[in-house]
Length: 355
Ligand SMILES: [Zn+2]
Image (cartoon, rainbow, N blue to C red; front, side):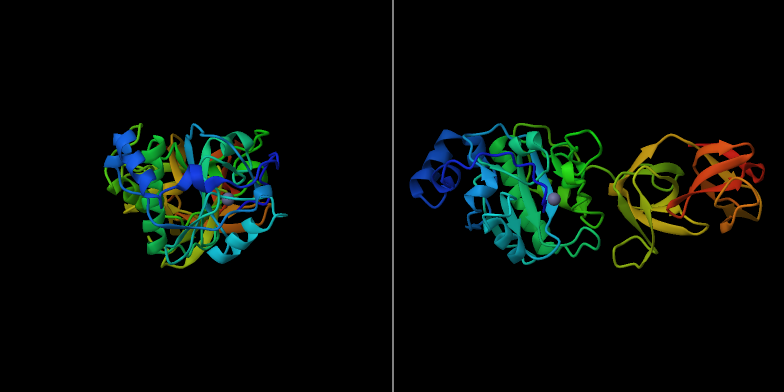
């Protein structure tokens, strides 16, 4: 959901989506689609949807568009709240589709019209926005939701020739701010958050086979080289670190956009990292591999401090064999990512390891 839609739309024109965008309930339309567009006829049919039109003041009417993106959002709640919000003429936000926990799909804006969802007008003009019941901070996305959404996205990609890859099926968190100051659109939203299971979702999107006009790329992330040491950079504003490799495990801390940690093991899509003198697990879909020279601790225990001298408070301890990635240094002191923050330890008790 996005309360800073960047809509910039006109309000002229009543809602008139059904005839152009939907029409699938008309037998004539089905015949037309099947014979006029063989590629579509071969693809998975559109999953069932119900219609609740967004208020006409919440989107911009348009003719057929050249669609390039599907933007994945979460609602920060259940479907009914989003549907009511978009039907409210004063909300000035909308998305094309809303998917509930039980997998029910509600269409609110015809595909050809421009919904106000991304906080970036250019992206709005080229995209379909899909809202999902759930929360960025703690997920809650259901299997029914993933399956319904994947079937819808597969149909959208086949119908509008959008490549089924993570360059074109993107998170709201991956939409640039139009002023270049970051991502998540003008509101710097971070949905759908780290609990959205991208590898699982993309595998479902691709499960229906090829089609569409673009390449059918394998699912994105989880970085390769499982088991070997790798420097991994966090790509979302807030990423939970858990005690084990699934969302069923407790949260032991958080890491943040741009921070780099060293992973030493993998389990499925999850990566085990040295985090704060202990280890934790992060979902690899929100990490990207980078090259770095890490510092390997050679002392049994090494104090980690808030500044580059023994005059600063001890924040924790790193242990023999652990690796941390420096973001800089001051004299003999190394400035490292440690426990979600930038801390310091003395480089004299470490050695460099290229990753
Ligand atoms: Zn959003």
